[in-house]
Length: 497
Image: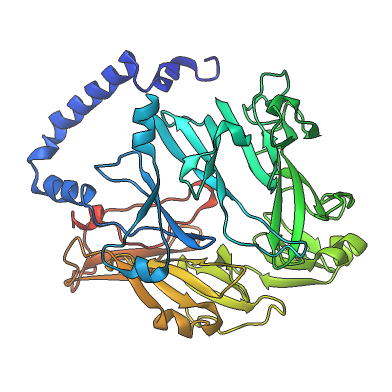
C-alpha cells in the first residue's frame, strides 16, 4: 500500500470505493457526450462484439489439432480437438470436447479460468518424438488471478488422472512454474510453504526436480536464485534431434543470468554460464538444432565483429563453448537498418522464417535452416498484419498463416515454407472472417511526416477514396514495451468510420 499511495483503493476493482468512482466518471462522461446506447454506431459496434464469427486458432499436438474456444454458451471455455485438417476445413467441424471448464467449475463450485496446458511428449534416445502425447498438465486460475493450480490430465480418457496413478497435482494457487523433464519428472518452482520459495516479486526462487509419486515439498532443490531476482526457473528444450537444459535467473524486466548444457541420459554434462561465454545478460537466447540463436538488445561482440542492437545471430553450440562468442564462427541472420527491425521468428522442419518490419510494413524472409541461405524471401514489405506459425516444426514445412489489412478481414491459410514467398500467394484458405463494414469506398496508404529535428516518421492513413489532401483526422499511436503495432483489421473501429 505504501507503494500505491493514495490510489491503493483502485486495486480492489470490485470494492465499493472503486465502483463508486467508475459510476461517477461514467455519469460525467455521459453528461458531456450523451448516452452512447442511443447512437446507431453503438448498435453496430455491439453487434460486432457479440458476433459469433471467429476464426478458431489450432495447434497440432501429436495426432490431434487442439483449440480453446469461448462463447456465450461456454464463457469459461472448451478445450476441444479434431482428428485432421480435413475435418477442420469443414464449415462446421466435428469438435470433440476434451475439457469443459464451465462444467468443471459448476461441479466443483469454483470459478475456474483456463490458463493453458503443457503436454507430456515422449522422446527416444535420439530426441525424436515417439507417438502422440497422452497426458498434459492443465493450469487453472481461481477467478482469473495470476496464481494458478496445476493438475495432470489424461488426453485419452479426457479426465483428470486418478489419485491411484500418482498424478502431478498442485492444489495451492501460486505463481508457479512447471515444465516436463521426462514422463515422470517435472521441473517445479512454486510456493510450497517454505521460507525462500518465492522471490520478493512473488515468483519462484527455487527449482526442484519433482518425481511422480512424491510430495512436491520433498522434491530436491537443484537450482536457486536470490530474493531480489524477479523469477527463477528451468526447462528442457528439444529441436531437430538436439536437446538442451536451461536454468535462468531473471534479474530485471530485460536482463537475466542463464546457464545451459546438453541434455544427455546420464544428466552429467557440464553447465555453461552464458555470461562466461560472452553473451550479454539482456540478449534472448534459444536454439534451433545445435545452433544457438541470439537476439541482442544492446550492441554485441561476436565472431570478431560488433553487431548493433536488434540483430539476430546464429552460432554452433560446441563452437561457442570452445571459443566463446567473440571467437566463434557467427552467422548474422538479420542486422537492422534505420528503418527495419525484427518482429518475430518461426521455424519449420527445413526453414527459418523471419518477420521483418520495414517502416512498420512487414516482409517475410525465408532461410534454409542449416546453411542460413536465402530460400525465396519476399522482395518488398507490405501494409498488413501477418503471423506465421509451424503446423509441426519437427515433422513438416507446413505453416498456418494469419493475415489482415486495415480494410480486409482476417484469414487463416495453410502454406508450405519450402515454397518461400511464392507459397504465400498459393497458400490454401482454411477460414476467413466476414467483412464487418463496407470498405469499398476506402483506401489505406503510408505517408511520412517530418518532425522538427528532421526525423521522418512513417504513418498509415485510412480514408475515403478521393478525400481532400487536407482534412481533420483522428490520430492514434502506440509504442509501449518496444512493441510496434502493425496494420490490421479492427472491425469495431471500421464500423465507426
